[in-house]
Length: 399
Image (cartoon, rainbow, N blue to C red; front, side, top):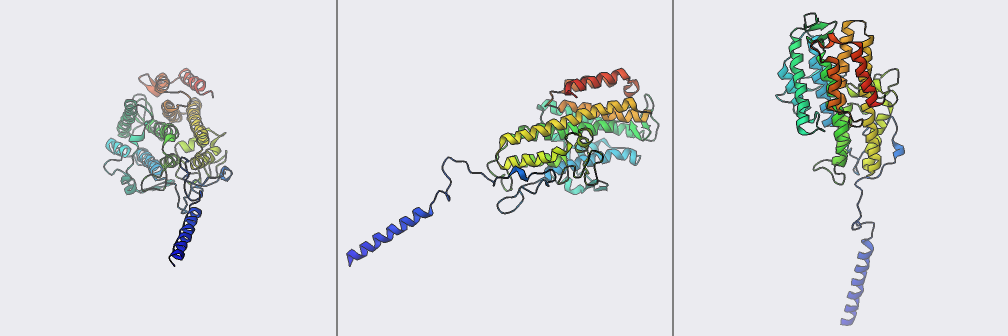
């Protein structure tokens, strides 16, 4: 009997051992030293020009891994700041420089509800968002240079606030006021355009292109951010898209002839359409394909799409600068010419952030000095000054 019990136990142990070996197959356990993909790979063929940005990017539970909020919040802050500046002309209002600075830095609950056209802002949401414009403006630059750019924009806030005191006066050489429907300072410069176009470069181009789609490509993609459904690299790419557009499909329905009702983009997104007809329709699929490349751990494809987006954004800004210099030359009135040069100056300021093309502050400042370095600014412009600026931009950007 003892012998039989011993035999039974031996057979039972052998069966358990065999079962254990069978259960612990290579399919169930990670292979030591082999990196496991966080996501299921995405077929690039699924990316089309109309694929909504978030549609392909879900985790194993079916939850989206895309979070656009920080980028979209900053986009809405830019809209709110721009809307407030517009109140000088729209409402004959005197602007408060402290409000402008607070909106820039998201300090002191500066944002109010706005519902006007494409601008839809819930002030309390932005105030509580935990993000701001100031600290990411010019943030690819060394700390001192970044602060110089932020301080320059705040100086323009002071200038537009001062000019707004004269909104009911008629502008002339040395006198601030309105030229047609445009508010200009005593030098005939439309400061609102310097700020808006300057932020297109210092905020959008620099943070999207030179930070998130350049330095930001080295972020971790092996683990989820604590408490989130995305990796740091996924979030960098999402933040870039959110700062470019509030829409699920960038420039949806746009044609060369018209942006269309769904393409409500402002700022850089709008000028990509207006001044880069060859490539604006390729920006959205590039963003989606780049995001898919992150899922696929395909660094080469990711860099290809990032470089394409950055290059085409820079081309749009340089082309816009040239376009508005041309509009100054063709303008039929002082008001039209002042508005054109105001926009042009803002884009020329933004050229300093065109890193792909090797432009910098020295290049940008030299052109600005040549255009408006004299005491009377706009009122002293000549064809020769404008032509010299256009030639420098054309040569630098090979346009």
